[in-house]
Image (cartoon, rainbow, N blue to C red):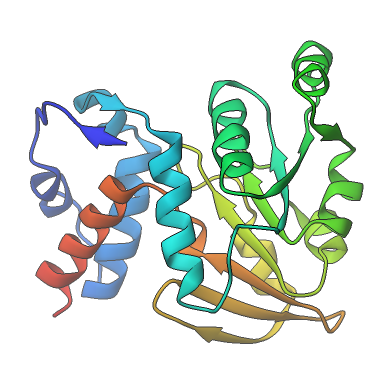
Length: 216
């Protein structure tokens, strides 16, 4: 996604939020801005699903992973999910889809994708991409994830995965440059790419700017 005409200074919004420490300011400030849709309301975006998948591939390469040949589950087959599914397929992924809307589900099938329930999807796929715009992965889905599964969001906000529940089910974790490994109570490991934030180079750059300004 590429910004066309920024209409506000994102940092100025952060300066209006009073938190106890810099880390909290950066993390909760970002979340507050996205949740209140300051960014969506004040920026016009051009969506490029191929760039999103390309950025995701670049991130995964840092932990020795590749989208090519990987079993990818797309949760949600709206406009974003459909475009991401095509982009992932073009990168060599084996794509399956989970969708509650019967019309969209039929559209996914007619496009040649295997479809399944979300619980079955997370049991078998190595990379789960959330594209519903709301919470799609909760406690039941987290506990059903395949060992070493990777979670990535392409929504416009940090909402796809229940990160609080993931933390509760975690017995150990290891933070990396591009996300966090969680060891779950069932013994499986799960990787949350970019701490559950959308895979969007624009928002990632904003977060990095915030961290550099308020933390370092």
